[in-house]
Amino acid sequence: MTAFPFSIRRVALCLSAVVPAMGFGLMAAAAPSAVAPREVAIKGFAFVPQVIMVKPGAVVTWTNADEDPHTVVANDKSFHSAALDTDDKYSFTFTKPGEYAYFCSLHPHMTGKIIVKG
Amino acid sequence: MDHDLIDPPGAGLNRRGMLMRCAGWAGTAALYTMTAGVASSISLDAALAANGYGGRTKPFTFLQISDTHIGFDKAANPNARGTALQAVEKIKALPQKPDLIIHTGDITHLSKDEQFDDARQILSELGAPIFYVPGEHDFLDEGQGKAFLAHHGQGTIGTGWYSFDHDGVHFVALNNVANLKPGGMAHLGDDQLAWLSKDLAGLASSTPVVVFGHIPLWTVYEQWGWGTDDSAQALALLQRFGSVTVLNGYIHQIIQKVEGNVTFHSARSTAYPQPAPGAAPSPGPLKVPAEQLPHMLGIRTAHFMRGTQPIALIDQSLS
View 1 (cartoon, rainbow over the protein chains, first blue to last red):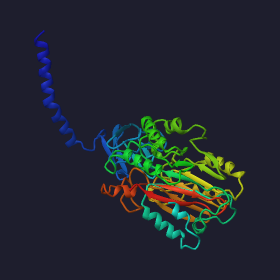
View 2 (view 1 turned 60 degrees about the horizontal axis):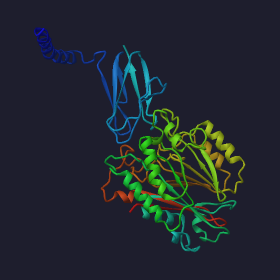
View 3 (view 1 turned 45 degrees about the horizontal axis):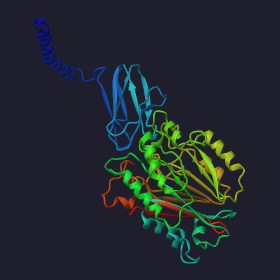
View 4 (view 1 turned 180 degrees about the horizontal axis):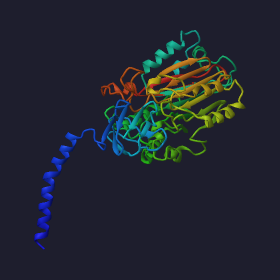
């Protein structure tokens, strides 16, 4: 009984040593990976970058850097965030290929697009 | 501010002089004076040239407060609650008590119930009925306006529009922050425009009309979305009236425009200033030195003088 937890700890130790290295390798070797997460900043009343291309399955995360709240709302309403105050984040996983136009429903002149391409 | 209104005719007051005077006040509130019942050719110029209290009946004043943004605590003003309280004190100290107050939106910063409650408590000290329209900050809850309507929607139509009459003046409250479309500006929508058409239909063209909403009903700066994309339809309905005064908030600064018998006025915020159109990379809150801030926040008083000429507006800063 005493040996069991010990062995688990050893496994955990092994993993903690190996996993970061694996993660590092993946990022270095496969930067355009299908599932690489992508970031969009909301700053200066704009989505930056305004248009990004991702692979199916990618998670896109928006972060509001403005002092004003903003939202992320698909033109076709297929996804939408709550109001994002300063530093709030919103993530959405794009599984199907296509073009997803979106805007800020509070400041509708702010528009952006996610292009999902296999 | 009474002294502005009792200037005799020919005293050299003209609109430009008045605007400069307004700018000098650098303030927080807007006061409107209305002179009702005059048929044609009522304009701000005429109002300013008119003989102050020569009307047949008692003149009245109303007050505009805007963009209180209760809950805002960012660098541009860490104490928006405090400056709202200053505005309240300023209003309470006015020599002429306003008959009514209009709040042109962004009551709260984030549409939270506690922010609506706090704003109500702060403004309840004013001792005059307050008529609200929502700003986009009052419409960003998950229910897209449910919170605002729960607090201020009683007796309103649709997403919160309504009208009322006071001493011969017809007041129209519009909501142009609901259901905004991608790539566009503010929007009234067909339902509201249809209602407006019916609402105005029975009025004599001599009726002075005050329209108030959050976002400007004229295009101030399209690149920043500072305008209302279907405002032309609303203005077409207002065209036959001799005196139309359109009051808004949203852009946190005084900008005015005259178009025929329609005058447009945006008001200062009590919370924080915003840059002049195109004067900054974005329209976000403008950070100014702390000692400068009270000069850029304000209220507005309007004087209405029946039987003479229409509305005169006076903007006052918080300091």
